[in-house]
Amino acid sequence: MASPASVLIPPDYDPKDDKGDFMNPTMIEYFRVKLIRWREELLRESSDTIAHTLQETELQQPDLADRATAETDHALELRTRDRERKLITKINEALLRIDDGSYGYCEETGEPITVARLDARPVATLSIEAQERHERMERTHREE
Image (cartoon, rainbow, N blue to C red):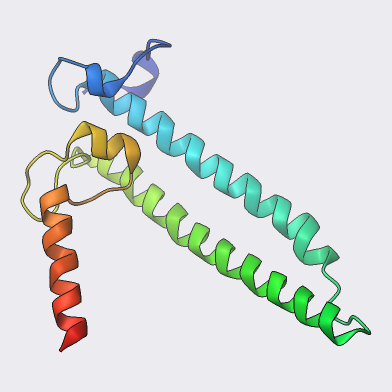
């Protein structure tokens, strides 16, 4: 495998149009860069939230309605940050899969995950078919 620094991604590169081998060096580098940029964006947003929103939130409002609104906004922001923290963990796991050569392959079947799915959801670990089976099983178990 080529080292990341030696692979240049053409500016108009679209992995869905790549007719080369699945997860060739250019495609791998495309997804590595996409994941790293996504993680940086999430971390930047999180820092901004901590620096501004959460520190400026005044939960001790004299008016009960204002306080309730502030507390609701605060709780929503914390839930959003928690979801983003979990997403960052998934991004880090995807980057590790890139490093170990398993990125882009369904962890259930070992088959390639479609490039379109990976482009839309770069942290995907299951093919669409395996994901649908997984969701059907979850619904079945929830209904029991």
